[in-house]
Image (cartoon, rainbow, N blue to C red):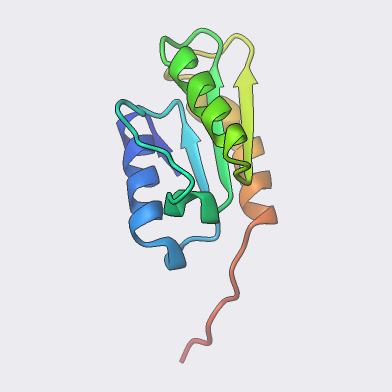
Amino acid sequence: MGHSQGGGGALHLAEKYLSVWAGVALLAPALFNVELTGESNILDIPLMLTVGDKDSLMESARDFSERLDALEADFEYVEFTGLDHGTIIPGSQPDVFRFFGKHTKGVGTTR
């Protein structure tokens, strides 16, 4: 999970280290100049994209959502009414935890 610039970073890390993650949540992510093609590794992992309708990044989040949809990605897009760039963090947590609960990887054994 990452917020703002951290959302862009979470997207980058998920694409680079795909096998590590079960899913990635992007909260009001900074997605400037992100290339997305049918060959993008990020299409192989479930994504959650959230943004508040009071956030200046809403249009870029909508655009990214439309691009994901066109590529038939496994993703959820949620716009939260009344939330801005900062309040998206606590405001989206119930949905983020639900998302992560649906997308898990097996846990290895511990010693």
